Amino acid sequence: MNHRAALAALGASTFVYVTAETIPIGLLPEMARDLNVSEASIGLLVTSYAVVAGLTSIPLTAVTMRLPRRALIAGTVAAFAISQLAAAFAPTFLLVVVARLLCALAHGVFWATIAPIAARLVPPGRGGRAIALVFLGNSLAIVLGVPLGTALGQWLGWRVVLGVLALTGAACVAALTLSLPALAGDAPTPIGQRLRDSVLVLRNRSLFAICATTAVLMIGLFAAYTYLAPLVRRDAGLEGTALSALLLGFGAAGLVGNWIIGRWVDRSPGPLLTTLIAVMVLALATLTPVLGVAPTVVAVLAWGAAMTATPIILQAAVLRVAPEAGDAASAVYVVAFQIGIGGGSLLGERFVSAGRLGWLPLFAALLAVGAWVIVRASRTAFPARLPAETREPVTAS
Image (cartoon, rainbow, N blue to C red; front, side, top):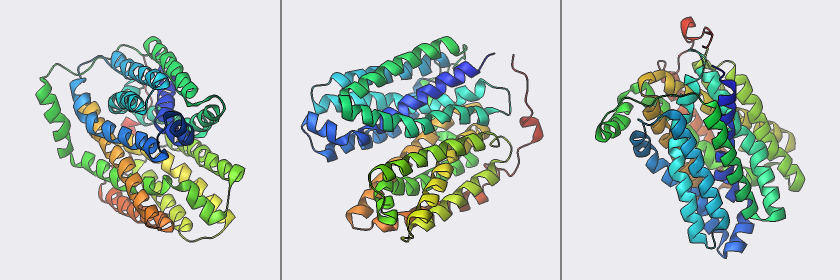
């Protein structure tokens, strides 16, 4: 099986999904003017997206478990492309919201399905590395997708950006259809039973520990990450091009972290994750006081490398502790991650509204310490070393 083209197609799909999810932040003024609404209303496009994706991930994943994987993942990307095209031509803000919510409905199923598919494409013991390769699309979206989309939107308008994303999504559908092998869905079971199983999978203590780690860690990280730009301005006085360069460096550092972790995630997940969390704690602690340009730059780059690499270990752990229920377990993990994004952004806004911007790194660091404790207490979910037989490469057929 030639899995490289399939993994590349999956990675390209994550790239367009992440770019589209966050692009309203970069095009906020342009969209607000064109649709005649406030900038706060445009910001709700991101919040409502996360809420809908989180609420529908488990039930929609359960309902679609029987579908062939190639058809399902291609269908979610097709829904993405249609939603972007609809939003690009939407004459009112309400219709833009409706189009975005269509994409959010597909979002949960897409992210619950993509990691199990990637793991099934490679020999046993190399699933983590496959997930890391696919998740490079996330980092590329931050480094290239959002900045280029923002620049294009400021030049030609936000509707052109969504049109380009729609065309790119359509190309991804074609690539997925051509490159993915036929992968069957789950065995036929009643829908009600699948819904119950999707929730009861949390009885797996290791999976519960992974989801708890994810929610606690991401709430803190996204509370601070949402306001990374004002934090950098406060700590280092960076503006304009210098600020943009550092934010780009945050994503670029994530690419490096992703590549490094992808080579080791199938060997020592526990030590890797505790090390990454410790790096983030130190970086966030450095950002708490105002220390000047050099410490701020180093801390932001270290934070970017560790934060981007962490979900690779968490997602690989989900598939490892629930091998017979990969899609259901991944759907629950998606919910935990969306709780982190939505809850973190909401709490960050509360801190900033109260004039406590400088407290955000300390808040994130404290929650990261809590996540570190959970990881250390959950050795079955995050073992120090995986058995050798699960790591030996096997020639794919």
